[in-house]
Image 1 (tube, rainbow, N blue to C red):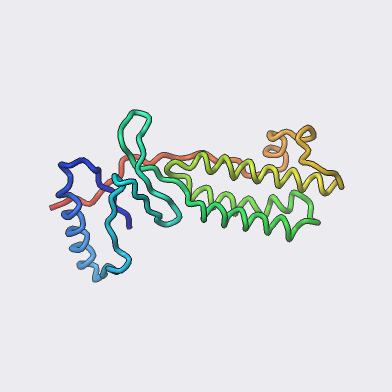
Image 2: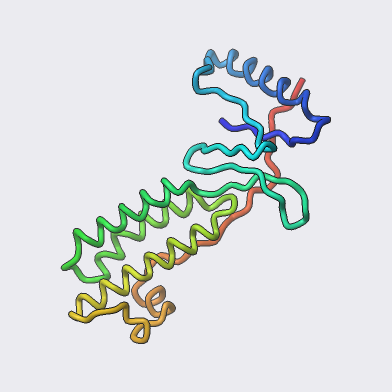
Length: 181
């Protein structure tokens, strides 16, 4: 669980109150916190942390206020690309339709998990990388070199071959926290 509290001075008391309240609620459920894994950090001090595949850091927003910047971890992106690369390698002799049929569920699941926060730059990288791999697969099937940029448009690849293309980010509305007594 990650709880983020605004770094404004008047909320200093809130950090301890939230922690105390959390302990009370978990005690009701007969759940104990692992104190070795539990830590409190201060994003105001250029600290960042990773949690469930996301990186959390403090940045200035477009409106000039400080806010949390949530992105997929590099490790998560690398794992996805390795998995897709392995599918392309194992099914090298298969038609591109079959390969796309295998990678679409992987892409859809990964993108749906990381669809929150500020993932659009990472999604752009993944989308371009997968598009290149599909083009390379098509060209190798025709025993040609290159990527075939002038042969197939991106629209054609997404529309006719059915490659996953829904890389939109969904923004989190205001989070609802436990009431503090």
